[in-house]
Image (cartoon, rainbow over all chains, first blue to last red; front, side, top):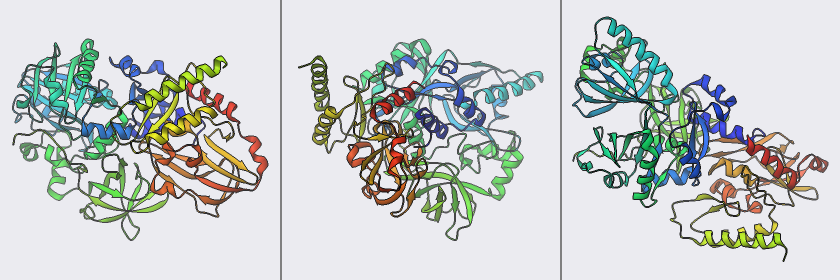
Length: 408
Length: 201
């Protein structure tokens, strides 16, 4: 085993999950437990056998008593409850909050019906991704958004800088960062039936991407029908003082079938669903077009631009990007981040950005970028793992079919 | 019966109760049984065999229960390297594997990279790798020698590293070039203490 210390092994696991802030990786190696932030559910995790590891400056559960494989399968068979309170939720308010946000993201925010949301990308001047985010238009004067924990400082500084400039020109926008709330994610086939026990609102009328402010288990929650697993499910923003009670209530109502699930399984689930992990599959130098997120760029935005890096992105939409994100199956050891992808003649055509063994499919899956032209499904490739080439082929994503709750 | 034996017997009985509890079979799972601190891997195909193994192991057991909760199976008649490999020597031949402590931390093993038969291995240097869902780790040779046999079963069933008792969890068999190197390794007591220190970090 590499390294005498298994603590270092735990760190290597964490590194594979969180490469969004490379500087933070080396800081994490030396961070003592005292430096790490704790969510409202920290003691709850420990009491339930959570194995806590550092992640983006927080102490988070990577898994519980069940293995990552078992946990991943259980999410799709029954359901999972994730503590994602480390992620950053914020509200933008004011009569110009919509045009303001449109200067920073690719979504058609104005075109969103109230109470609906979407995945979007914050772009930089070069058309690359600063972060991905789920944004929701609550009303024309209130937008609720959630950004990645590892990008919190970067994103808030970026938004604040642009907000100051916008306000100095007379724009009406302000923000509130929801540090008083905790985000929980409830995913899987049992998510809706279990949550229905805890609220009077009819959840069958809340479709994928929709948002509601409602009472759940006695407290006012922000509820979005969305997730990071490909399953039907919800992200619930609850006042932090009620987070433990809500978590307990969800687990109890499911009679133990919905399990507390950690970051290890969360990463396997999102990979199976073909979803990007910022820091691995999306970075500052990768555009949403290259990442296969053209669908997230609103039609009107493709015509008008008006977001940072629009000139680069609009050109890519016209000419096609030079690289594209694709899925892979492979034999041998699982392909990991930074493994080279070669064509059958041995020429380098791309690189893996995320990969692992799929607990639900029981085979290796990976995603990465290849040169445009080499990206068609079925293309045979060779993936280099520890210097040896292994057979693989390009495939479409998601690897596991999604089950988003949409109107029939 | 001494107090120690009475305590051990009570722990075994409680452990038996937990093993016989109904468990919903969804693949394999690892459960840390707090009452007697044995890390047991359960498979829905083989509960009975697992229970028998646990009892057999309990009699060899060197159970180490520190305040930090380090608790893995450490067998008395093996030697251990700091990089968490175990060695069973038999004259000029030896069998290597990775320890219970290592497999517990790795999680479900999905791939084992085996060396070729005939390859030489050097003490402290990597000869292969073991991959779990989330991590890859080199396997280092605890003693130098030449590979005479590899556990081909691990290619089909890498999960054997997690579920099998020490004897079946072997990775390679080696003809030793310097049996004296075994003196540099730790015995079961030293290794248990070493792991306790490790768990404190």
